Length: 218
Image (cartoon, rainbow, N blue to C red; front, side):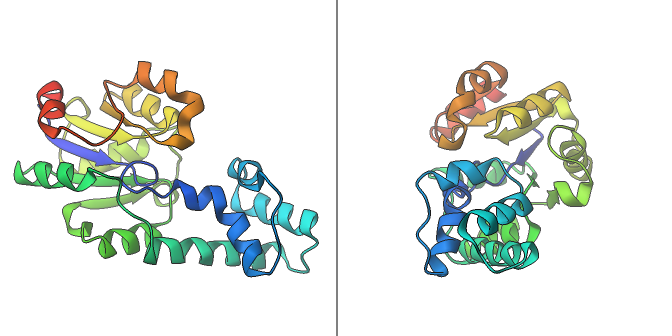
């Protein structure tokens, strides 16, 4: 039985991974600089601060790391505020869960302001009982704290709470903590696809056929 649902944001609810893959290129373009091929792959594994230092070093930017971080953050915030779309089929799942009075919460490693801006623009913010971020909880998704906090607020037990995630490490963490897991396909995680498939309770190549999912999950 499904008594609660926890959704990741980037790559799960929102088709937002492209901005992170192209953020450095877009930032440099705004400065009138053409980025090297494959810059997105280089920066994707770095923190914002590491990426800023890389851009300064490689492109000879006469800016400080905090200044570049601010510029990158503003570029990302604009994308969430104005452009990022829901993944296809997500709205149907949200409507179906709400129609069944199943509470939903957010668990994201991303920025709260960006998340709220996107969800409000897309008119789904009110669907969620709470928004939990890794920075506010104090640990990343290699630890289950964020999922446990969301379940606590919804007053649901892990074994009756489904976690929707796109990344392998997050699916694994939630499952080890006793949650039921639905893995959502996102191109950014192609290299981990086999592990994701074999770890999750249910694998969703896309958000389609809610009734089939609900029957399997129940």
